Length: 395
Image (tube, rainbow, N blue to C red; front, side):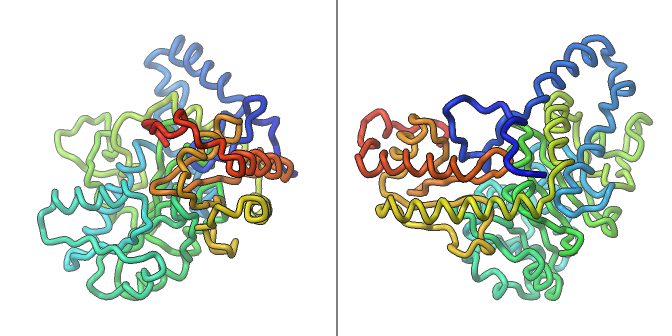
């Protein structure tokens, strides 16, 4: 498949979108598919749609579509709920597999909500668990036989730094720990192989590189040999082995279905399912090669034209995801000024301007045009305007 494929997306005229690492754009075909689901399926089939339209099977069917992109076999990924819920499920199940241990190891670059979920579960269990956070580069050395679970995000949301999934998983398992990977900034951005890495659990969201739309459902992967050992702490109705038997006690499904919780969000999942059809014609190796080329071009042009910015992402592309981050004292205002001129990136506290490179709809000419506008904003201090300093709810 040749890249890019801009014609497959609804992109506003005059916009260079460098924020697909936060929210992917709308793929063409999604509007019609969701409209059909509303009018023909919900509107005409009514409750019969759970059977006649395949709604009940959607979490597993779409899970297999995501699974192909992360190297997971069929029947090992299921969709539903939010990423925070999936983190909770994976962590609860992982801790139950190592009942004699009390340390959960993560890094200081992990996405805060993952750490919040750990803290909340620790308080809930009230059993002496400890969240141990170390610098990303120190994780491998911090793994020891006190650690029950190692829980990391493969690509750092702020800097784009990428962990070595296979190496860290091997180190964790050698110490007897269970490995959980958050693939929020990996799935659809780079080649992932959960089967090859042999990690026990993986979770991720689908509204970033997978273009599922705001609030699109999350996924969870359980290594197939562990499925029946994975205790579903959130023992929801649809994770039951026979939901429509209406038993008054819970018996988990013997498959990945046990990680389902509540009613699937059919309309959101329909949008995601249609968006994922784009990937039927895409090889992740091609995506990765193109994103690295765009990222390298961006770094070179920014450093040539915007000397006031400092690169905070790894310079070595093999150590980086599909984003590039620069630090700037006035980064928030500068990003707002940049967005105002049609180049959309985002900002992460305290001073990081973040740019995502998604080659499905970006090409070299977009990078050059974006840097031209960025240089104008910075070199002419166009950011130095009160309208750009007032903080918005979402940065």
